[in-house]
Length: 235
Image (cartoon, rainbow, N blue to C red; front, side, top):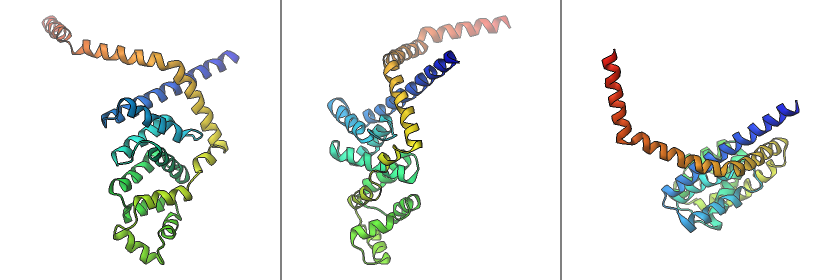
């Protein structure tokens, strides 16, 4: 039983670690695709790491949110860190995947204001948010509030400021629940696996890239043609 348990734990460490490495690799690729490299990439990754620390979200989650946020006009640094944290809190409060919530926020951030469509999307996931936002902008009635939204007078800043108060700390609070503790345990097992497999993962990527070049080479293609002709003649 002890050997079986050790094997199971080892497999879990490896599986979760590899999953984290793949997620991080893909998130960094999205950032590089936006032209974020070098020192700027280091700043963005630090923002993502600081934003998800103490929550059940992974660094890959934070980096993925960062990619969309930067494309929507959020600046790296404290502004980006705050943005990721608010999106995470909102996702936790709504019990939805963080990237689902990020898509809504990125639409708002990209236009600089909230429309009735995004307002309804947030209200559906976080009942009571519309009322909180209405109070924040000082609208005297629901009709007046909806008119402000239609006129584009409710900014993305208003949404972030309201959500920070409305859902602030939900990720940290969830991390202290039974489910949150379980998720954090799995996340930390994954972090151990990530550290163990990181070097092997990078070597594996290089090996795959080299193998791909071999497959693309003219020599291999010619071998396939010659072999195919031989098989044809045999038949």
